[in-house]
Structures are given as structure tokens and as C-alpha cells.
Image 1 (cartoon, rainbow, N blue to C red):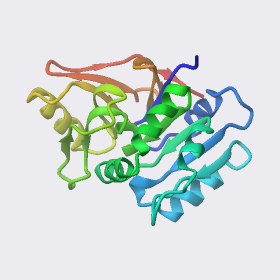
Image 2 (image 1 turned 180 degrees about the horizontal axis):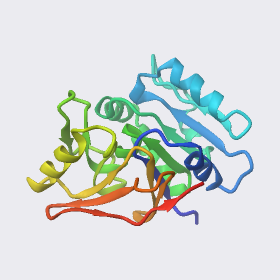
Image 3 (image 1 turned 90 degrees about the horizontal axis):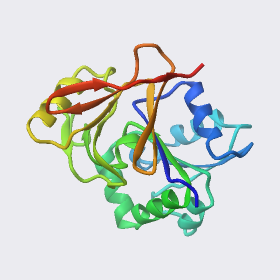
Length: 222
């Protein structure tokens, strides 16, 4: 039975991280499904993904506006990698749930499809997260998909409010979890954190608890 895997990016990763993810399925040209719901199906982001992975993966995308494709479940279950965009996490989750895509994603994950994404596409897999879905002030949201326990915060080194806001929330009773710098990624096999990846020395991920933050060992990809 395939191991469920999730790779969550703190922001927009550099090429070695993309290569790492695309190598996980063990296929020369993995089938990648791009889901840009959080970005309101922004056509520019869709074109960017097709351009970025041309020749490296067989890319398709699932748009939810004005409605999702009839073969959405088939698209997801036949993919090797599902890439979720950044954007508005709360809006994305609401749209997914209306159309039952949250359940499809769980089935895909449990069947061995690699789930990945940055920002909204990273934090959606957790029970809770720190998000700007409700405004630039940042808020704690306890309404994630819950595939992974605890909370997550992206852009930890890239946005000045992220670190103080996340540590404040956790100190005040928000679920503890993991913070990810912009150029770092974290890999989960099943629900266990197995690796932190980065392309820059000094950039990584942290366990954040009421006691503070603890840096995690990271592997630098070349």
C-alpha cells in the first residue's frame, strides 16, 4: 500500500524543491494536477504552471469557476502529484467543501498521490493555520482539512508579522505546530514529519509551542 505524502512549502520554492517533489512518484513524467482555487483560478498562475513543468511533467488543472469539471475525482485519483496554489485559504476550503473536493483529496492522499503546495497550498492540510484570508492583520483559523495534526504558518521569514503573530497565537492557546520559511519545505509521510528541505543555509522550519520555537534540522538541496 502506498504511503500518503504531503510536501508543504513555506512560500514559492526554488527549482531543487520542485525537482524533489516531482521525483517522489518515481515516474519519468509524473502526472501533475494543478488546483488554483485559492487564487480564484487565476489564468496567469495556470499558464505559469504549464510553462514551468513543460517537458518535466504531464500537467492538467482543475478550475472550480464557474463550476468544477465533471471528471474532477477521476482527475485527482489518476494524478501522481496534486499541486495547490497560494491565495485565500478560507475561500478555497469553502469552495472545495461545497463540491466535495475535500473528501476527494483525502482519498487521493490515502491512495499515495503526493499532495503539495505553498502558502495556502501548504497550510490547508493541517487542522489549524495562521492566515491572511480575513485581512492583512493575520488570524488563526481552526478549520483546515485536518489531514495533519496541529497548526502551520508559512512565510515565517518572509513577512514581518508572521513570526510574532504565530508565536503570540500559540502562547495564547492556539494549537502548536510548525512554521516554514519562504524557501523551505517540510515533508510528511503519513502524519509523521520526516524531512525539512531548503535551498539556502540558515533557512528552514521550526516547531512552535507555548515555550517558544525550536529549529529543525534541514537538508540543503542543490
